[in-house]
Length: 135
Image (tube, rainbow, N blue to C red; front, side):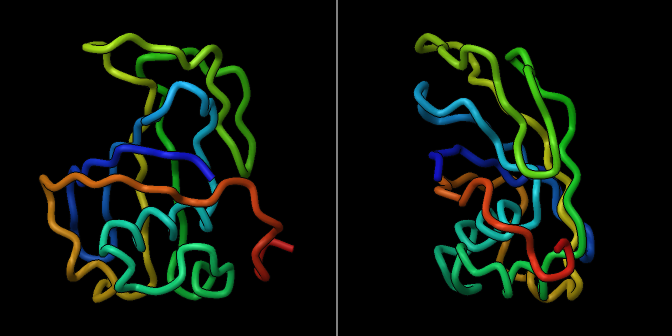
């Protein structure tokens, strides 16, 4: 689990775009899978959507997630679970490393309480076992 700062950039039907940035210099990874995306969505609603660590809920709500190019840092590895950042240290006043996430859910109503131009902290889960449809 990491600590992230998240901005809701855009919402359109069943899709939401989130800018996710590292919040703590000791964490050098961003998630790239549906479980991480689900954790972001749950944290955006202060837990109202469900359990951020539930692989079953992630599989039943998140259709897909794509993660854009890393900003303000050097990407050292990326796979189906993680995007690893080289030396995530940053000084106060600098923008921390982060990326734009495009998340699509099966039912647009899942995103009803998420509003553009808001921000929140997230403790989304990293690198869990495969979801049922990914196994």
